[in-house]
Image (tube, helix red, strand yellow):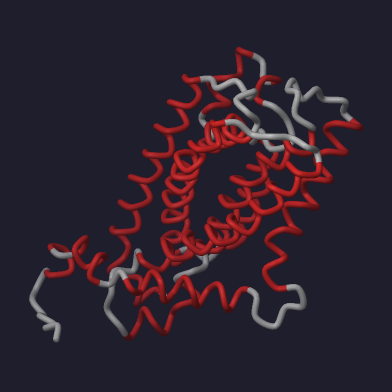
Length: 273
């Protein structure tokens, strides 16, 4: 039987150990979020496939047929777009769900002690389930277009980890700020919508002029999306290693800022909510 020891300053000194101690909460909250998300829906988890599928169709028509933007690869344009949609959908879903996660768990936060970081982190983990469901359609596209990925696909978890880091860092910051400034619930959808158009989802990074590439690389999702395409498109997508390094650095900086801001405001969450 576990002992609960109450001592002054314990939450500060034992915070990261408490994250492991309360690790079951990750599973409980994640499973609860999954059940609530698709409760009383007609087609349930199929929404995880329908949303990126419709976006893929729109982007394929606009960029390939209307704008005549070259793919620059041998892969079909639909596969090019969906390979970018996979990490972007995971990222955007994580931000949207994490930003309002504390507000949605007001009763839990005000009555029970546990590291509050578990709540937004659990929503990001929940988005991994949606990612897994959406990935099924990627496999279906391979079969439809008779396209075979190469050995690079084995390295996909590394870029998924990078997407997780980017999502968690920015998500923690927006979550903390949303508790104090409720305006952020209006800002987050704008960030997601704007980010969709400045990320290489509907187009290839090869189309970006060299003079803008440094600024372009400051978007942490650029390296993630390029990495996904490199893994899923048989290595055809060119990897700009300077871009990858910048995207990784920005993601880690956002993670540090997000954790720092979250921990700084965590003591006041119960009062502010």
